[in-house]
Length: 202
Image (cartoon, rainbow, N blue to C red):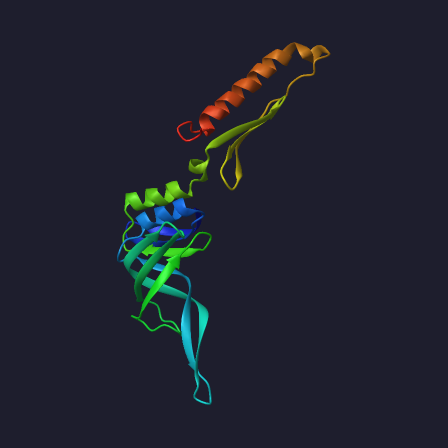
């Protein structure tokens, strides 16, 4: 899940998120409560009357904000359907008119709560922490240079770069070579222990 905007306190506030996958939508399902307000783009049939008096309808993309009254999670699609009344003035949907918003992956939405408790705040923090989705850790290494990386289904995240100057094999400086190599390997090991959560990584 990607966090685009966050302005929350215990007294309320709003966040803007983009769910990346079905797991993120499930998290959103657990995050949204009846009484929250949700804002996103949606499609609605809008009737218009021509000068001749004929009425035609067309599907228009509009941005709506509803106060949530019911929440339904469809695991097959996957999608989250939120039903509620429109609470922000709109040219095409009257105040208080019912509408169903559909939240899908890769589509941004804003969520406002009158109260953000620690459970909801932690849920957002955990869902947006990309390191929690990484089930593979990789160390890309050459002599004196290493990158500790985490790999998710959609990205490779460099968690730490380790760089130690290693003397050449020949010449007077070669005396400190073994010591420098040991220092390098020790730093790589410490970086792995600090940056990789072995309860998540396979």
